[in-house]
Length: 275
Figure 1: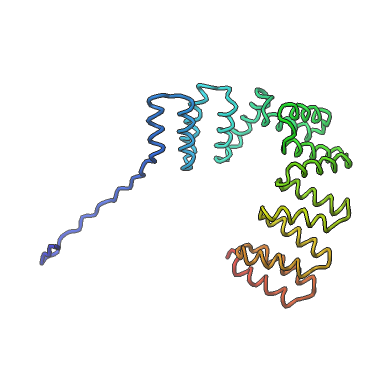
Figure 2: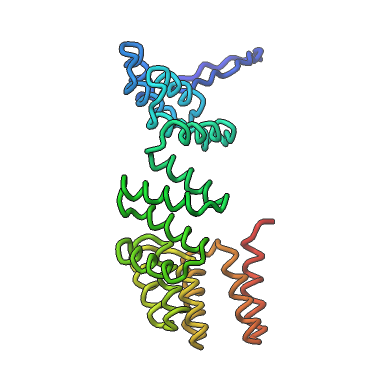
């Protein structure tokens, strides 16, 4: 029970101790590294640290692995990921230069060299790099991404359309190819209904606000204003904290000269927006 004393006593202040409990996973791999300082154990330790957002010890563990395998592209890619999370642009830039100089066969190096050639408008070199990529990795989504960008740079419109059609036929879940295919249907083939079909097929499996807004835009273009607005109303219902949706709704109502409705979404947005 409680002890009661009939007189006052001094209160002794004590400073509470706070301890960060060690992660069981971190402790396990720290122990593993102490027993066997192998590349694999350093990788696992770095991954454990990074899962708890401990970027410095993660980088330290990875650098220990790199001392054992200084030319490992895999380890350097892991290090690049840490640099990105640290916002270490200098370290990242040095790593990217290393890839370009030492690992020309990797997708990362080829992509960097390709983009550099495009920036310098050296399209002949960019074509050669694209051929190298295709020979090594085949007709991947990245290949079509590069090829489409290059065809656009060179104003090769017919080739560009062919690439978009081919890319979409192989990778219907890649959002960029979906948007480009819809654009071809709308602008080149002059078919808003086919463009709508492409976009609707995509959003059946992938909820993407930008794609829904594009569908709404097609409805507006067809004169189906109520259907277009219904998409925005659904977004308000699904994501009431997206203040930008209220603003866009207000703009649409204003353009329709529905000034009473135009005022209401903005007023809601003001209450939800930052103060």
